[in-house]
Image (cartoon, rainbow, N blue to C red; front, side, top):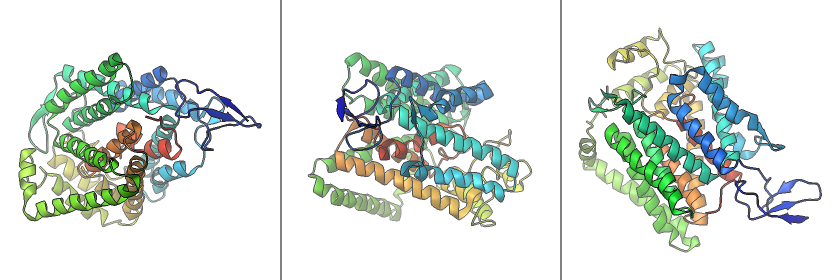
Length: 429
């Protein structure tokens, strides 16, 4: 068995062991996975961000480009990137169940088509987690988000949000919350990657510029969900930082106490109606500007088929009287592309209690695995980035459906967490 020096851009190992059989292994006995060079990985991530944001503007060709970038890497440099390992099985159970829902869907053709799209996006997310280093991942996201926000500002498209009535930047999306989402992603990626060891010019190009532009986009979007979730992300990171200052054996207990304290504060605030002041600060009312009406309607519809649901993407279809009523109420003239502004209600309606259970299980797995890595290894930038992303998606999941749709940035982020870190492909910070 011989030692070989690391290859630039190929992952975190300090060295690679080559066994007599010729199989490359890491020192921790996990299979070695070659990674894209950082330059190519960053370009691919930028293109991925743009396609996930505005694929509809470019048409079907953009989806083909997305597939062409990632699917050929199912086998990369002689190594299969997706095998039935624990991490792959963990993240594919839910999308496979979505595909299975074609058997009971009220619109089987729509379910078959869109669920396969969703599954293919998950496969690409796993491949990205395998072959893209965390640093390139963050840099690609920050630059991609910056380009998207620049395009949104340059479009000079503002509109009145159907929920809040606020006049805000909707950009090429036609949605202030999508502008806010990409701005939030750019801010998180830029700020956290700033703390990686790198040259000053790299910090300016990959961190400072994207963060400043994305902050402008977030301000112009007036997206309350993005602003609030961003604040909570950095509150959590601050709390985790304090916990990691303690000896490792005390961190788990201290983190548990912080969570209990946080829940207690929220419960006390709810008892004293603090939520009213918070909602007013973000320009919302007690109904979350119409969202609670949506949730009520969603729960009513879900109770007709509580176990299995209507089928993936089989609720928001032409001819469904409840969907038609909600499109009319919220002035959705296109009569498509709407959701319940709560990922759990959306899943309960479309995939029932079983689908909801699988998604909640995956969400909690992402959160606790990310938190466990930080508590065990400390404030490593790649682990903090993962924790920040899953906290962002978790907070937003109560008022948005970022991880639900096909060909969107939410599933790319969500489904790449477990494959990246259970398979130990992170870069040592």
